[in-house]
Length: 131
Image 1 (cartoon, rainbow, N blue to C red):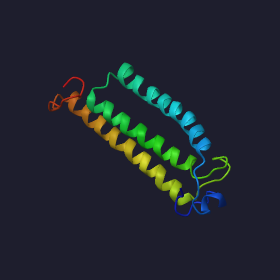
Image 2 (cartoon, rainbow, N blue to C red; image 1 turned 90 degrees about the vertical axis):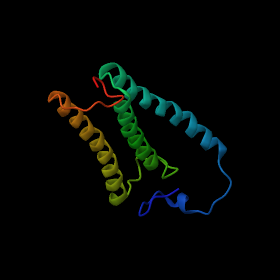
Image 3 (cartoon, rainbow, N blue to C red; image 1 turned 90 degrees about the horizontal axis):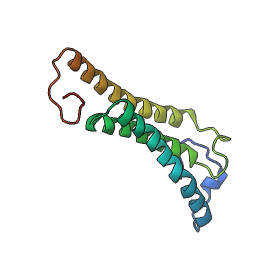
Image 4 (cartoon, rainbow, N blue to C red; image 1 turned 30 degrees about the vertical axis):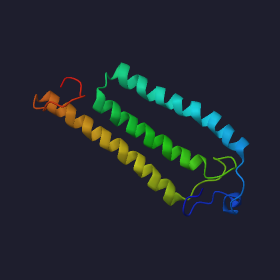
């Protein structure tokens, strides 16, 4: 797996071969629980702190999923220590822009919901608290 203009290491450029099943197993045993931890750290505040309805919950899940997927892309780009080889600035900047854009979409929807609620102009919407 590689990213354009990324120097993930020469090992990433070698021709395909047999899969290293032990590496895949270790990867799954590490990233599976880490992913679940990020899910809990996102979902618990959404439900308990913000009393998120369906729409807000989906927006939070979208932003969290986007951020963790971008992080995983940069972690698996090399077989070596992920933070030892720095990615090229272009893919890194574009990936960060995608995450920020996803967060902005969720924030804009939240601001619109708050504005319409405060002005008592908000149309009824399923899944939004107070609708």
